[in-house]
Length: 373
Image (cartoon, rainbow, N blue to C red; front, side, top):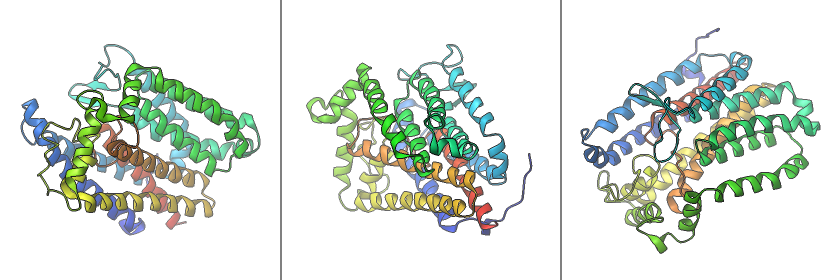
């Protein structure tokens, strides 16, 4: 694998500033929100925070490595990355290699380390579809068959994810890939042919499991059963209410004191709202907004220079971060039913953190190559 040297001056300063700010602020919030959880588990007050620090450092290291990997190398091996991700998504379903947590089999355990293959599968699928869009550009834009081939690959990936089950990731990756294909020039009529069937499938999946139905019912009126099915959303909304304009101050959240489940991961945005108020919420939204905007701008610039594969990757990463951020925040404020999706680069979690850092590293590599074109 060819590796080329890079300089920090060759990277988008706004993207780097947003990345550093989000990672730093995210670590502070995980440290703040995880103390009660760590005490309940009797593992030491800073146990979860120290783990998160290790994940961040490892993620930064992995991201830096990918800033040295040429985009041509990623394009050459994009199908290999996809095959490896499908292999691990299959492996996670084998009893003995994994064990269920909260009813889901999403993690491969290697000693004390757990890996969630679905997080890396998101990026692998983006790389493969980006390459397909370049190799089969004419067929993709002008024939139905060319459009159905990536849909078949997406369907296989979605099936493996649903067997875990991981409905939230299926929604995120499906929407991301469809967005990439739309930006790649696929005819609208192909989407119109696919859309009714896709909506029917997603609707069926949403009501095919009792716990998903309970979440949908709780989403409509969480206060109707605020101590059971609506508990998480109710506690999250209370956190937003307590935050008011300027928040209660760092470390002063009441909801994180074991009232709000997953306060350091899926619902960390609610803790941010409680401790920093509307000002903190708007600041976080602006940071993610700039991050996504810079990703899309990098993709536009790559496309303008004829770097189609690089542009597709940048668009895919931008869409992925945008969608996952929007869904996580929407769940926190009650605009969407509760789903187990993390806030990228901020929530606690090793696999999600490392995968997000790798994605940003690839994005920075695209930025570097477009600047030095």
